[in-house]
Amino acid sequence: MRTVGSSREATWPAIRQAGIKLLYRHGFEAMNLRELASESGLKGAGSLYNYFGSKEDFLFRIMCEIMEEILIELEANVGPVEGPVERMLAFVEFHIRWHTGRREETFISHMEMRSLPPDRYRHYVGLRKRYEAFVMKIIVAGCKSGDFSIADPHVPTQSILSMLTAISSWYHVGGRVSLKRLVEMHQQMVLAMLRSGEKVAK
Image 1: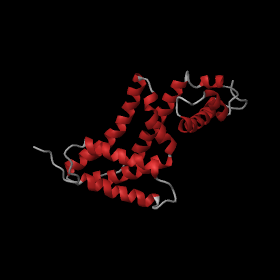
Image 2: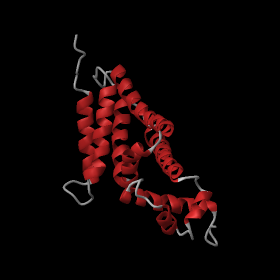
Image 3: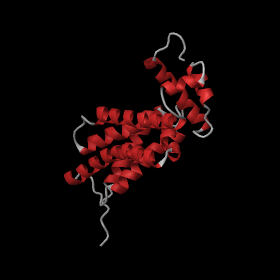
Image 4: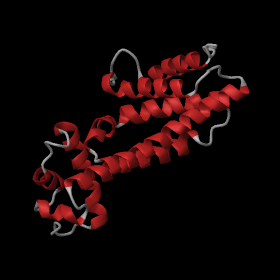
């Protein structure tokens, strides 16, 4: 039973927000559905089953929503940008700002992959690969235009994503550099990597 005055549309965001905080704080295995219900403003854990069938369903829904949202925002922010160099600069800024601004979601989307069963793991990885493919497409276009010089675009794609995502684990507002300066530094590093002129060994 939902709290009086609540609606399905209004309650799911509250459940999701509470769930993200609990997953970040305790991890999937230790997260308690009774605590989730309480944090969401529901009267009991039974009310949660109006929104998902099991604790595993809840995790899968949260993780997929996170990836679907970042894919939509990626296309909205970087998709319209023209030119591989400009697109890569826009991507670096988008990725850093999204992941540092949503630290909890970033942590969950990476650390809780291990908690998904094989079929759901494959589905989730498919969403992640769409994100990776977007980045790789920029690199391939840059190699074709002569703006980048990389023998195997897969390697820098993985390296760039790992480097930029890791920022969310150590960057803090008010630290040594501003977020704006942090973005600029990583834009320079990424372009330097992509212009390294590495050739395939023969």
